[in-house]
Amino acid sequence: MKSCDEMVNSLIERRDKYNTERKKRKNLIVKISSPVLCLAIAVGVIFMFPELKKSAEKPVADIDAEITETIKSKSKKTDKDEEKTIEFEKSITDIKTTSNNEIGTDKEKSNTEKKSSVKEPHEGDKDTDGISDFAYFFWKNNIVVSGSLRSELNNNKDGVIEIYALYRPFLPDITEFTYDGKTLYELSEEVKDESSDKELQKIYNIHVKEVLLNAEKQLRENNIKCERKENTNNCLKIYVTAEEFENLPLDHLSRWNFDLAFDR
Amino acid sequence: MDNGASSYRRFLDGDDDGIVAIVGEYKDGLILYLNGYVNNIYIAEELTEDTFFRLITKKPKFSGKSSFKTWLYAIGRNVAVEYIRHNAKILNTPVDDMENCLADEKDLEESYIKEEQKIAVHRMLSRINPDYRHILWLVYFEGFSNKEAALIMRKNERQIRNLLYRAKQALKTEFNKEGFVYEEL
Image (cartoon, rainbow over all chains, first blue to last red; front, top):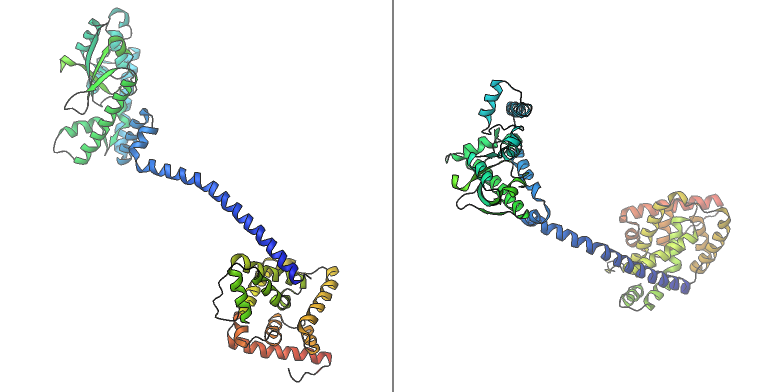
């Protein structure tokens, strides 16, 4: 049995040990919690300013896809719409296959003309006609090029040409975009009407604006001079040589309709 | 009784002598009281030390609603109950330790209780129900009133009165078995 003094000494020893351990634990908690807190604040700041986050973190290519997703999630797809989309996709695939293999009935050919305004070029034309290089290239990338642009490109192979890139989302990959059962092309037609649904207009405008910004950014990254056309929200003025034009970054511009400045 | 409170106040003000005084004054009684819970004088001693350790580390506030001794014994009881809850399965004392244990317990009770008659009663306490043992210890050996005992044991006064009555009856039965008759009980 411990005497009174022994117990007091033991108590004081235990107390000192306890205090030291508590200090250590406190220090450890501070060491761990302070970086975690800083991280949490940083994350909080980024989430509070989503625009900052977008520009800082997201690659350009993702923004377009994100908008597509947003529009998709807002849209209510019915079975009928899906069927329509599949049909449309099928028809586009048919057109492509037919033109590539140079096989097809007259009916299919007339369908091609109806569905898109792309004039079907032939790979074999490449060598015989100087402009066919471009035409085939653009057709392959779903870009509509007007006849005058082709001749301009052909005539000014070394000079700088001035073209307008007008965003008209109406080629095959629009099947990804649906809002309220409508393709983006149908939407673009609908929003031309001033009496159309305001929310619809808003969604379409936001989408077009984002696409325009991304295209501008991408062009500038490729050292291609461009500027926005005044009083429009879907048109870019691009200054390129014929060679540059051929190497335009097309993953974002594939739904663009190129035209010459003097054509408009 | 107030000495304990003033010693504790002194300790809270930073004077370690305060705790020395408290340990000196209450150690033995608390060990014997807690021994009633754990039936092992060494464990009771550890629990007593833990009780004082809780006082000096957590520094609980003594409000003065009861005497300091009552308050200290209530803390001691809580420590013992916690210990029993956590060590219910390993509470049996090894046979080798038992002899030393009993010898130390005897020494302590002789030094603390002093009166021979009371020592005989205390030894008989180990044979009765633990609740009876606790109440008899608090009232007859430590001199707590029914009210104070109620505070320590977390019961109301009526329960304490009934418990005390049944404890006396149980103790009488045990003495009768041994052939003693204690009228004063």
